[in-house]
Amino acid sequence: MMQLPVRTLIYDRDISGHHLDYLQFLVEYLKKMPEEVRCQFVFVLHEGARDRFRADEAQVQFHYIDSKQLASFLALTSVLRRAAAEMRYLTGLIHKYKVERLIFMHIDAFQYELGRASISNFGVKFSGLLFLPFRKYYEDDSTLTDKLRREWRGWRKGWQMRWMLRNPQLERIFFLNDKQGVEEYNLRFGPRFEHLPDPIDVAQITTTSVVDLKRKYGVAEGRRVFLIYGHLSARKNVPTILAALQRLTHQERSQLNILI
Image 1 (tube, rainbow, N blue to C red):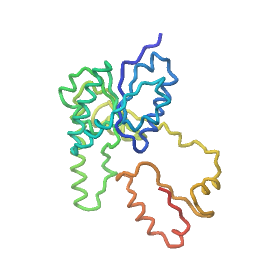
Image 2: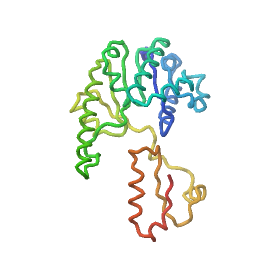
Image 3: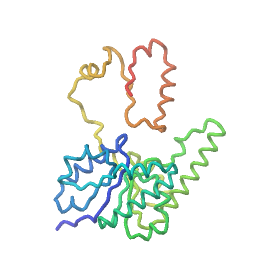
Image 4: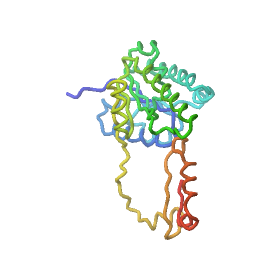
């Protein structure tokens, strides 16, 4: 007999970048499960995700955060205050849906909240994806100021992590596409970190020809394509990439097309 999963909320307020794509993979997976499994999950999402998942609502349960509630979150400029407000909102939903587990699709901002004793004693299990772990050798150390800033960030990130891990109800923290990071964190903080492979099949081959794709995006024949894709956040370091391209000769640059 199949053991049913516990009642679970999956929370993601963000609809930028790949967030909706990752949620879609989860939804598609659940749609293949029996109804008694699907009914154990509730997705709590930005109301802007409604159009994306409208066709799935007959099989999977969604709770959309309305615009007034979203505006109240975004009005809080402090990350800690905003996370506290979101946690209070989620607490209400935990009671409403009689939830036993809460999964954060982006757990980074909730580290302080999850380390609080009142949350630890709440009787709910927690898991989530950590998108911005501290990896020292990825940090800039070109100047003394940068080195000091790196050391401060490392200390702060380490403190945040140890604080969150005080919560015995925190089951798993997932790193996306970073096996080495998982190994480092498990050694440093204890074995609650797991590698999560990217659900997007990067080896997938398109049936559309290169010629047709170039024509679709207005790329002249003979030009090489330099592609920058995904969410254009600061950590993607696009200005540095563009500055590096300036070091190419005029002739080399004339043969490039940059797609962003």
